[in-house]
Each structure stands twice: as structure tokens, then as C-alpha cells.
Amino acid sequence: MKKIILALTLFAVPVAGCSAVEEVNRSVGYTSDAVSYINDASQWAQDIPQLAQNAVNDPQAQEKLSQELDRVQQSIADFGKTDVPEFAQGLHGQLTGYNASLNTQVDELQQRIEAGEFTPELLQNSEVMQTIQKIQGLMDQFKQLGQ
Image (cartoon, helix red, strand yellow):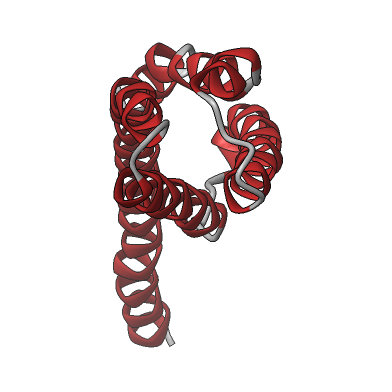
């Protein structure tokens, strides 16, 4: 009987250890994904205004801007599918809220581009850049999660 209990104990310890390692890996993976996503948002903040300026009189540039906005929306959707560890739920909720706003704002821009009503001022007056800045503002908090 003692041998069976010892064998079960020895088997249970590694299984529990694997679960803890799995959770740590999941946490590190999530944090890395979040930081990468926020870095992408920073890049959008740099690229989109110039693309918008070029799109004013150039149909090819308008198409490129539209494609970039599609890519932004795809990134939002992809990040939304990320497996979120319990400890990051609150911060992830904030980011998800900003993402929902950004997605709606990008939809509105896309509609205006398709309607031929796009101007650089439209981008400047939209909340897209402010929402991206809010997303960027979460960077330090996500980095702290990874430590």
C-alpha cells in the first residue's frame, strides 16, 4: 500500500509542476503578444498619417491606406482571439475596449474612403490617433506583467 501511495505521489508532483510551467508559459506568451500588438499600434500611429496625406490625390495611395486599415482591423481581430491569463483580465479588458473603439473608427474611415470623401483632416479629426495613443499608454503596464 505504501508503494502505491508513493508511486501516486511521485506521479502527481510532476503533473502539478507541468501545470505551473504551462501557466507561466501562457502568461509570458500573452504578455509578449500584447507588447507586440502595442508595438504594431505604435507603428500604425507613425505610418497612417503619411499614408493619409499621400491618399489625398493619389488613388493608388488611397488603396494602400485602405489596405493598411484592413490590416489594422485584422490585427485587432487576431489579438481578440488571444488566450488571456486570469491575472491579466483587467488590463486586457481595457485594451479590448480600446480595440473595439478603434475598430469602429477605422470602419468609419473606410466608409468615407469608399465614398470618395476622404481628406487628411478627416483622419486628424477622427479619434483613431487618440485611441492608438491610449493603446500605447498601456505598454508599461503590460511590460510589468511580464516581469
